[in-house]
Length: 307
Image (cartoon, helix red, strand yellow):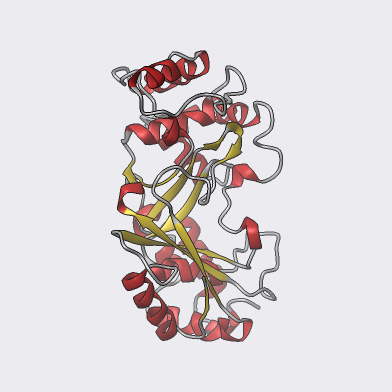
C-alpha cells in the first residue's frame, strides 16, 4: 500500500491509520511499526540490505568480508560478544551486511528520507523521498541475545560449502529434524554458533534460517539510542547466495508500506522537523553530527541547508 504526505500532520494521520489497521488496511495480530527513510523510491530494491547489492553474496565474498574486517579492525570488535554485535559494528561503518537499519521513531524515518548526507556522492535534491513503514508481528521481534539471531547472523561467517538447504526437510517430525541437524553443512553452522555460545543446543530449525526478523540491539552508543535504532536481519532463501525476502520469509510475515513525499513538500517538512528539534546534531549526538551542524547548518535558515 502507498500513501503521499505534504506535512507532519498528514504523516501522523497516516501512522494513526496504520497503527489501528496495519499497513495494508487490516491486521488481526499484534504488531509494532518501524520506519526507514530513503532519499528516493528504489522500486523493488527499496529496503534492501547492503550485502544484496553488487557481488557480495557470490562465492565466499560475504564471509571473507566479515573475517577481513575482524582481522584488520580487531580493536573495534574487542568488546563485541556475538556475531550479531559485530555485524552491527560493520553496519555502523557502512560495510555491507545482511542487516537493514530501521527506527522505532517515525520522525527519525522522516528525517533520513529528507537528509542530504554530505558524504554521499549522490545528489538527492531532485528526487522524491519515501518512508518505508514496516508492520512487524510481535512474534518476529527478537532481542540481540536471541538464539535465532545467532543462527541467522552466523550465516554471514559460514565458510565451509555453499550452504544449500533447499533439499533438506523442514518437517516438524522429530526424526526428520534430527536428520536435518545431522547434515554436515548444518553441523558446521553449529560450530560457528558455538564459538559465541558454547552451550547452544545442537538443534536448528530450517524455517528460522529462511526468515526475516526484527532485532532490538544493545543501546550501547549514543547514535543508536538517539535514533531508537533496530535492525531487520535477513536469513537466506534456499542457499547462502540469496537473501530471504519479506515475501519468502517463513516466520510471521513482515509487511511494508511506502509513504511518498513530493519534492514540493520537502522544505515544509524540513522546517517542521526543525521546529520539533530533529536536527543533525540531535540525530547524530557525536562528533560527526555536531561538526556537520556547525559547518553546514548553524545560524542558517532551513532553506539554506541544502543549497
